[in-house]
Length: 160
Image (cartoon, rainbow, N blue to C red; front, side, top):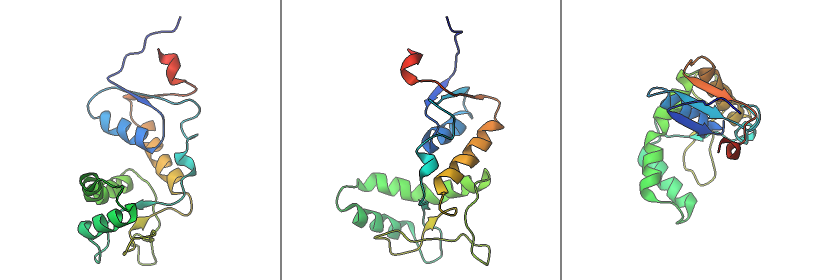
């Protein structure tokens, strides 16, 4: 029989979404992250591209919203796109603040790439392993947080 473990927040999975939630939830209570293998053994680890955000002086949230809706070809919910795009720059800054490395140009500014259907360069990245780098930074921040417990080699259905 296993010991009972109590927590305020249970996060299943250690990809970017789960790790990001764990860090935010830890501001409000105890967090347990369960992952079926090692914490960095996720699809996030293989993500190459980057994160799009309106960060340059020739860009705007409104333009980014319109580009995203065009790229989505009618499949996007405008309110959701507006929310995500509006919050993008803040989340990129948060990643930088926790130690995620992002590529810089020769002047030290973020090196912004361009995605298909976008009219401006707005994709922050790290080499060709952006997901791996973001995950590394999030895991590093979690390692230093005493109220987040990460349990490796756990299958979610076994929690029942």
